[in-house]
Image 1 (cartoon, one colour):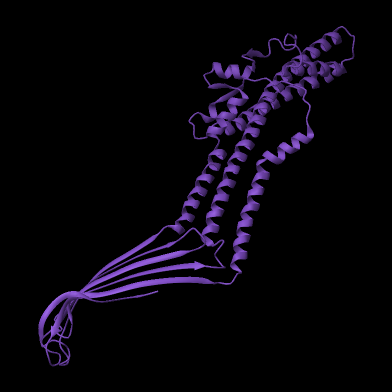
Image 2 (cartoon, helix red, strand yellow; image 1 turned 180 degrees about the horizontal axis):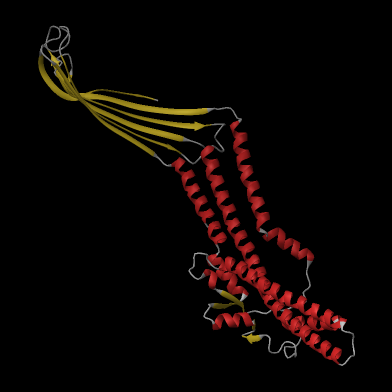
Length: 399
């Protein structure tokens, strides 16, 4: 009797999975075909009670997961962060401009006859400095250029210029010849940021691929649990029918009464299987819901998912060598390892370059100038001013 029941249950499982004709007497009335999908009675009751039921295909579930899955959303931030790190690393090549303006006024009493004034000694000075510096992205070179200017006035009669104008221009260029020539800290960080961006992109694809695989597994797990529930219910009905037949035969005295106990135990076992299958459907619903939808949705925990696809079994011939080649070329974890090796090579090249001697070529050039209203004095010391002229007093340069 148990062998017959198990055989009938196996046939019903094949009917639900689509391996047996859909017109089987064991499948009729238990599953409702809807657009190629199988609608269990629990989902029909949920739809009737107002609970939101969404029929999804496997591809639709994957698409929704790509839009709503929190793991994918978090992974998409990694390339953005690495892109910002790349921008931050390239700021090492941004020119730096510095400028300052200063105004000084000073009044002091004379402390000797050489102070330059019979009364209070007054002096005013206005100065401005500007400088630009930049590290170039080529060969570790850097340059700096600066311009300083000042204007001063004083009642000191020892001054040859009043007002007095001063200015200077300087330029410096530095070129490393060994250490820092092929690679330096700035170029290392820029190259590492680019490589980390590539690694982050691969990580996003890996997360999407893994999530897609997990969603499909959860989708078919839910479809399987729904089908298993229908099989468990049909098996329970068969066990109940067997129990009724056994009791009928016992009433006419054909089998011993102990057979009813065995049939009753079988009914209890089948009833337990139905309860377990219903609980497993709820677990599968929660797993797939968490993968497909955003938990912040207001109706997140009330949505019921109905699989719209049924599994199809096809015999396929696997090309082992082709599968290995495809895995070596397209597996994201292998690609990440390759990118990490390339990043380590960059760090290794920088470390080796730092062991070279520090040999640097420097080029400096500067100009200075002094001018203003010049006083030409008469005989004696210091002599009274006899005339004044505005001209450049002198200039000098060095390199």
